[in-house]
Amino acid sequence: MTATVDQTDTGNLGDDNIARKWSYRYPELGIGAVTTDRFISQEQFDRERRDVFAKSWVNIGSVHDLDGNSSFFTRDIKVLGASLLVVQDKKGDIRAFHNVCSHRQNKLVWEDKGPCSQFISCRFHGWAFSQQGNLASVPDDGEFHFDAGGDAPAQSELGLVAVHTEVWNGFIFVNLGENPESLEEYLGPLGTSLKDFPFQDFELRNKYEVPDDANWKVVLDAQNEIYHIPMLAPQHRFLGGGAFATNEDGYTRLADFELMGLHTVFTSDSDPNWHDTPLRSLMAKLRVITPHFTLRDPFVFHVLFPNMVIGFLGDFMFTYNIWPEAVGHSIWEIRMHFPRAKSLADRVTHDLMKVRFRDLLCEDVAGHAAIQEGLESRARSIFVMGDQEIQIRAFHKNLDDYMNRANNA
Ligand code: FES
Ligand SMILES: [Fe+2]
Image (tube, rainbow, N blue to C red; front, side, top):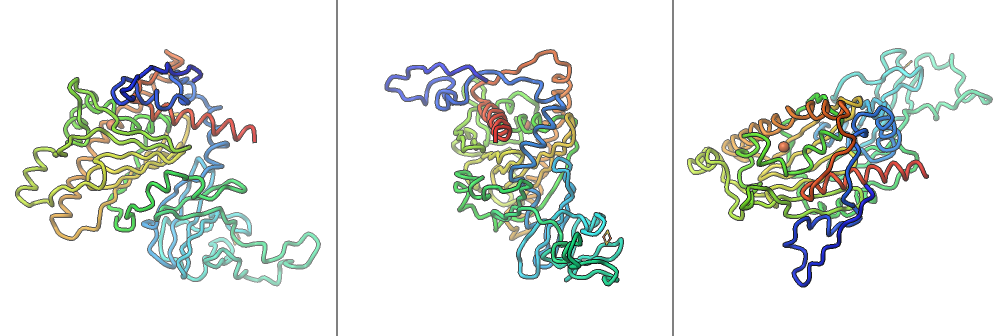
């Protein structure tokens, strides 16, 4: 991506009306193509695992995965090469540990989630750890050489191995690097821009884990633009309602795009009178569902580098975590959050939205494997992006820059 942008002279008009205005505003992103080997190369995949996922802040869940004080959940995350145990202790503090017993490295907790008693015990020989990860008791401990000096480790050194953990607006992030910057620094202006959003008023209502036969970046790229909305398939055109307005030529347009360091956000041009699908409008009229309200702009899509998305569509919030499993295989984790329901009509509203969104995403998933096959055929070594795909350009540039920095550090 080395080509530079033609700095079109916009005279006194500003750049609002020129074609390709986002490239004009962000010349540092260039206008070149992206190489396709990055989606099919094992070497690239290994670099991403080593230089990106092992060093950046990665969202592994949220407070919705916990049941309050004295509870836990576990996550086996292939791209991190780790099983993680997240514990909220009896005071409410949240910590993540490698889910590995300090004795002979057995997997410590095998359940997905549950209440966490005062001690967490290993099923192999019964070593027990406190909620804070300290080694609390060892059966037959007189037979060990703890604190004996020489090569014998001190018992106090045999707690669980903690990983850097921070919680932001209820989202739990870990960083497996050695001395990471704070999560606040990492999120930078994107974190600040969402500072006042009332995340605490939202509850997690649905979760999907979709196996996807495509590289994780294929999955992200396919979501990280709205160029395809009018063209792809019927549900895309129909179920988006007025969130994705089309211009007189029938094309969607970005209303805004912002590059925020490693992260990006875009909004779609929406119908100024934000209407909805005919079915939903009818149901709202009949009061079967609650009238539509809009959280912010009808469609907002934040990409939190490397693999998380926080989006808003109409009156609900969705998150994606796109987990690389292998070069050509990913897990697309989709979560839907709604404001707390106050009435039966609210529940129906949310369920209707859930079904619409699910059907819309099914159309996306159907295409991912076909894109991966196209890439793997090596028919072409590059792909190009239009100005309405500047988010994708930004993501790949950020990915390259991040890996290059890691290699030069
Ligand atoms: S491996 Fe856990 S107590 Fe032995
Ligand atoms: Fe789509």
